[in-house]
Image 1 (cartoon, rainbow, N blue to C red):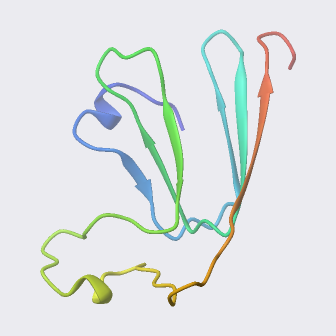
Image 2 (image 1 turned 45 degrees about the vertical axis):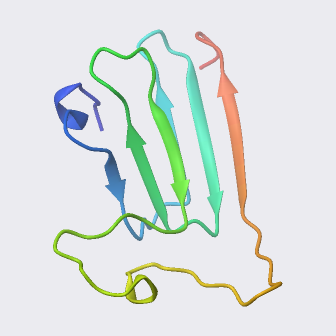
Length: 101
C-alpha cells in the first residue's frame, strides 16, 4: 500500500482485527523494516504532516469507536486481567539497510 501524507492527514490508519501477523515497510531509499507480531490483534500506522518518520504500533486494544458511550469494560477489544495476573506479547523487528534487497 503506497503511503502518502493525505492518507494519514487526520488520524492513524488502524487495522483492527488484522489477519496478517507481519508487515514490511520499504522507505524511498530502499531501507526496510519488517515487524512480526504475536498476540496483537490490531496494527496502527501514523505520522505527522511533513514528518520524516512513520510510526508502526502493535495494539492489544484500541480507542473508542465513533459514537461509543458505554462502560469502559464494554469497550470493543478491552482486555481486563484479574489482580496479580500477567500476560505477554512478542514483536520481532528486522531492519534492512538500503541496497540489502
